Each structure stands twice: as C-alpha cells, then as structure tokens.
Image (tube, rainbow, N blue to C red; front, side):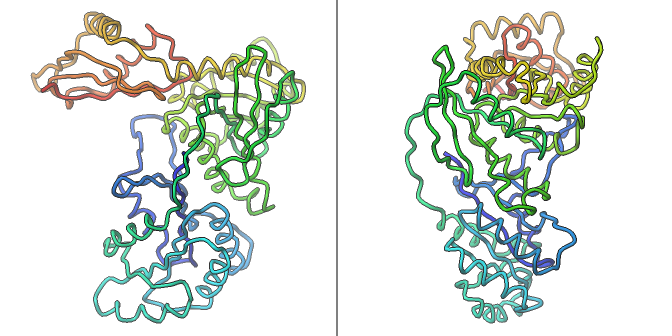
Length: 436
C-alpha cells in the first residue's frame, strides 16, 4: 500500500520549505558516511502519531523563464495531480495577495482536501489578522509558525484526518519492479522492448500511482512480474519534462511500490548528478537494485570499454557496490533476455533469511580473524546476531555497548555476511543493540 501524499503549495516567500522541513525534521534518513548519496529535499517521508505519509515541497520545483503567476499555477497543478491532501500556505505578515487568490482558485477546483495554513504567526498579536484569509474560500485558516514550530501539531492532526481511507489490496505474489532514471535514458524503450520479447502479457491494470500503468507479464518459467511504468511523467508537457526535481519525485513513487528497482543510465551521456539522486533514494528505501546501462550499442568499444565503464560506476556509486551491472540496448535487444532472470535473483536475495545458528558461525569466524576494536581502553564485545526482517535483510547484533561499534567494523561484518551468503542486488541493514 502506497503512503498518502501531502503537497505543500503557495506563492514564493510564504515559508513552504520551512514548513516542509519542520514536518520532515529528523525523520529524513541521511547516511552521512556513505559517499555519493545525495538528498533532494523536494520529496520526503514523514510520520505523525503512527501515520506514515509522503510530502512534496513544490517550493523546490524551479520552472524558469516563465511569468511568476504561470509558475505558481504550474506548481499547483503538479500538486493537484499527485497529492491526496494539499496544504495551501499563505503569509500572515503580508495578508491576502492576488497570487494567493490565484492559487486558491486552482485548488478550489481540484476537488482534493485543502488545508489552509497561515504561516509566520509568530506571536499572539498576529493571530488576530488571520481571519482575512477566510476570503480565499479554502476553509478555516490554521495559524502556524514554520520557524518556531507553533501550530505544527494541530496542522498534522488535520492533515492526517483528511487522508483517504485505506483500501485493502488483493494479494499479489508477482515480482514488482520499475525502471527509474532521469529523462531520456530510455526507460520507456526498455519497457516496450521487454514486453515485446517473447513475453505473455497477462493484463494492463491501473496502478495506485497516478498516471502509471502496471503491466503484468509471465516468463517461460512461469514467473509472474509486475512492471511499474513511470512514463506518466510526460503527461503535462514541458513542466514534467523540464523539471528534474519533479522527475525525481515521480521516481520515488515508483520506488515505494517496487521490490526491485532498475536504475537506468545512458551509456552515451555517462553519469549525471540526477542519476545519483534517484539511485540514492532506492538504496535508502532498502529496495533491491540493478544498474542498467542502456544504449550500449551506440558506443565505439574496445576490449577495455566495458571494464572501464563498470569501474566508473563503482567509483561514482560506492554505496551500490552490491548492485549488479548489466549493459543492454533497448534498440537491438542486446542482453535484454537476461534482465527478468536477474530481477528474479535479486528479489530472492532481497527476501532471503539466514538461520541464526549459521549467521553466528559467520560472525564468530569474522571476529576471530579480525578482533573487535577498542576505544578509550574499552573493547567492543559481540555476543550474537539474528535476522529480524527481510526486504531488505536486516540483522540485529547484540553487543556490550553500541557506541563502540565503529561504522568501519560494521561494514567489515556486512562484507563477511556477503562473502558467506549471496546477497547480490540487495542492501543489508545491521542494527546494534545492547544485550540486557
């Protein structure tokens, strides 16, 4: 089940990003010691009183060379398309403006739940001035201060109350995968090529992500797959195609619903920053990952070309050292026949369970070969470990003091687990707990 989506909309300088950051707060997971993971703040997961949801900060969507009102309108339309609940932000300091009224007219026609947040209410004197915003026709104005956190809890309560009721999903045992990447890397071509290559299409069903179509197909070994197509990004023309941050946000929606994510690179253009953005999201979400280098047929190659390109990928995507790399061509169908089997393998590894007895044999052998570190005269002691979850495989290691587990030793233990078991294509999570 996908999380409900909240879009934060409004004219410039009303504090949309401040409210976004206030709600997201420390709930955004950033792996600081992992090279190459970049965080784009346009999209974030958040949680309030057990209710998980996703947020879009339309203030981060930059559309240049357009009149201001046109930009605001386009951002509001993006929010209408994607969101379950819309938070319209205005500024108490400046009162009702023409731009606020333009946004209100668009949102009023959206037929989506809209919550009016009056920002910059930093003191009681300003609170009395919020009633002018009733004129926007968006319901009761809610006083908040993104800077100081005033009213944030009440705003979150109202947001959660407006979420649509969850519908029970039918049990689906198919392997769900998606192609993600920046525009023009050939995602749609890969989709079409795979479906056209000796596959039996079962059905085309409407996905839970707006404008996406999930296509089910089976292979000759009777494995069922669901391909999540993100091609709906082209729907609204230049806004969708020219806004890289927006394409990252759409990729996130596909990642949320995938078991395995195929990160598509363009062999002609090499590696760009946005490739790292979307790949970083897949890694942090704990999905299985395959790096797919498309348009491989377009390069002039020698005996070293493939190895050199692979070395470049490993250097730029150090945090994806576990991800297999496949060089394909949607145009010539080169190596496309290997993708479904590789996706199946990664999905299997992604939900693999290791018996505790076997896992502890590996951990004890690892410690015997490389003793645990000491800090300030105190040595880390590892007592035992157990696997507590899959998708991704997650291990809890019980120790005397979690603070003594340096990330380099944690990485060593992860590498030992990978050497002992085939976890190709899936991240691993290791959690240290103090033994009671």
